Length: 145
Image (cartoon, rainbow, N blue to C red; front, side, top):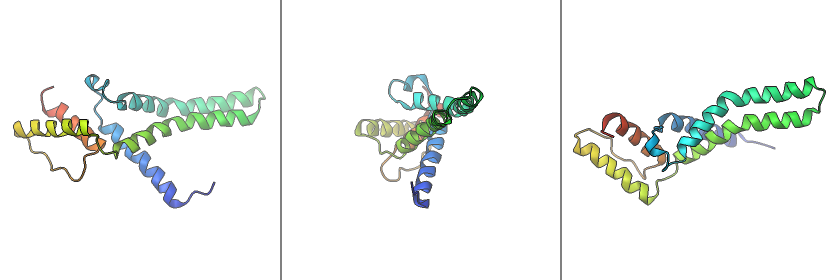
């Protein structure tokens, strides 16, 4: 597999966007039925914390028992790829433009900020899920629930 620096840079950028999105998106119970992000963020955090341990355990267990190294390496790679899959999904989701249903809701929340007299930066281009996450995060902190 020949990966160019552009491909690697693109992949790392998506992971970085995913981390930023995971930090920004509010993990409120009322948003759970509407957005899969809550579950993906929780699962990714769990995977980041525990999957490296699973990978090391799989390798050492197979080596200690004199087993084959190939399946153990495959399990270790799979375990280490799980957090990357979650961050990749979050990174792609963060730059996805909002569908029309959420777009209306996005502007409705912005209007509530205007009615409350709270300054909010103008929207540049088409709003994305990252912009919605930032708006929701700010709304939960500054507006009434």
